[in-house]
Image (cartoon, rainbow, N blue to C red; front, top):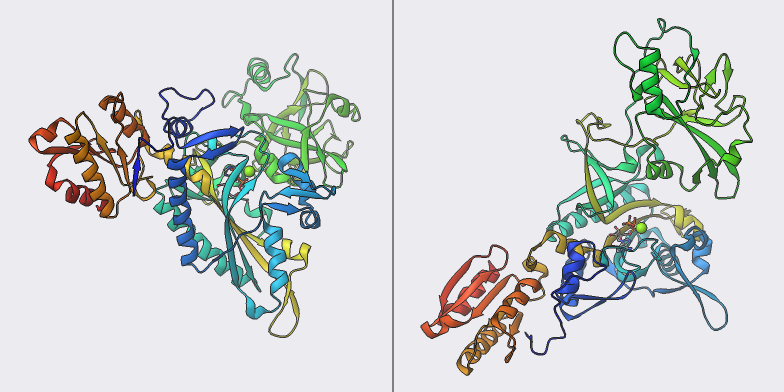
Length: 592
Ligand code: ATP
Ligand code: MG
């Protein structure tokens, strides 16, 4: 196949689009692969569509290889199934809703668990029908709060989503493993530098969930890895609790004047000036910071919550939210605080002078959860619930007893991995895939049951597995570009070879045409820059570099001496080849 630049529907741009923050977005627009239609909504131009289809085919191949069956659901979906699972409401502003002419509610599918579940229920009724693995490669709609980086976070995007249906847990485990291994092959073929991370903490429930994160500095996810191979989403990192400490020698807690110390930094300075320690200076890690929150449960009930953590750590909002989901969390407002006269803003602590202030059994009755590092015997400086006063030597387990622990503190580079595999390193990435044991949640909500071997009705157990197919294109572009433009890996390049007619004269164009035709007849996809007239060789070279086809053949001045040039887009290596040998040589380069 030959794509002639004189006719190809493409306009390359010399300048970066104003709204493009990341290289892939910049280059995909400049090289004429995509065009913005609306915020977070993009058109695939011919070159872009060719790359996209190749990526899609890799995903499809590997899904077919494990025996999953492709089908396709509509994107326009009725409300009812999503109401049955409560997601019509839970999605909030995250989905596109619309009505038909009769006023019936519809949505544009953000993900399709409900439809798959209902369709299996519709058609299957026996354990003998299971397991079954179904997938689609289909357009999803999400009204993302912050669409960004072009196709990386779109409001319309393509996802491969598959679902497994099994009669028992062992079956689900096998289905999960099969999908996981297909994902490994897909991301290997796409050439990603990726980590498979635990997506939710073990404490949150038994079912397995892992994310495939492509390492990328422009990604929005932060994850951790250790030298010993531990990898997890920051949200899922658990803090190893230290052993309890003896506290027999710790003096009784004493409240002290610490005027004008509303922040941790001012408090630490004051402690070192007024109450110096003998062994070492006070640090922020000696202080216990108490954060007051207001929770809203899914049924609308509100509940205050206090979180205590070492003063040298910030609260990580995402970790906190992840721990509390589906409960919503917000800082307690000053007005809400007035309901608790025992608490003094800026000087909040769990206990002082024999009074217990925080905790379910305390004066305020506010549930008090602490960082796992706050173990029995640890000594703290914390608020005395009196303006300008702090308590020193307040001992956990002696002077106050939390109601439990919570993972709300930020994770830092150097923190120990929970499995003892060394210090954690933080990395940025973007979620490319997600494998998830859903269990019986959707099957229960939608009544998907089958008869088991004993003729008893049992609820089916499910897995759900997603890949961001359209997202993969900009991610590949992030990994494969240089100053001059895109540098596609062969497996997904829009063409195999880019032939440039670089010069003037009938003879030169005839030779370039002949080479292009022969390469095409040999089975290669060819971009042929046949533009004549005012388009200079310089412009053609620039476009070839920008477009990023892996092999470039230049038919130029050398033709007079019977040679053309073959250039490798990635390495920049050039080779002069006799005209007669160019087809064989190019085929060898392309086929490796
Ligand atoms: P993210 O954390 O990036 O928002 P998610 O947790 O919402 O992803 P899933 O619902 O698990 O993602 O969707 C499966 C896959 O679809 C993701 O792994 C990701 O690759 C892709 N994806 C999700 N949202 C988008 C989007 N707005 N644009 C492009 N791809 C997306
Ligand atoms: Mg999302």
